[in-house]
Image (tube, rainbow, N blue to C red; front, side, top):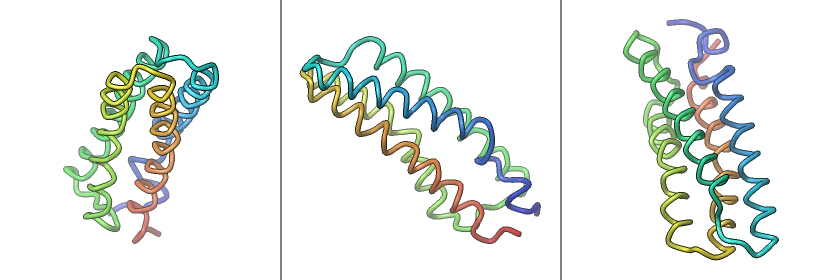
Length: 130
């Protein structure tokens, strides 16, 4: 088993990209919500791209587990992983169901939660590390 700091599949460029992208979509959704507008194509496109990045992050984690690496807290890790890949589709569905400014607020809220879940995913992988 590799050291958590050196071999964590959920800590790196892809995780950073997912956090930055999520925060950018959150800021855009907040601007749209403050302007009393429903979710727009930019938000939905951002959610789609975010989902692709999160799926790639999930695949990397599963490949690492398949290769013999183990997260420090497997139950919590896989719970966070499932939650992480479900967040953008959930935001998409809820925003489509609420075609008002509150739909944009939903996208903003979910995109603010996503970086927290990414960090928690990293923390649950690295619990035993070192």
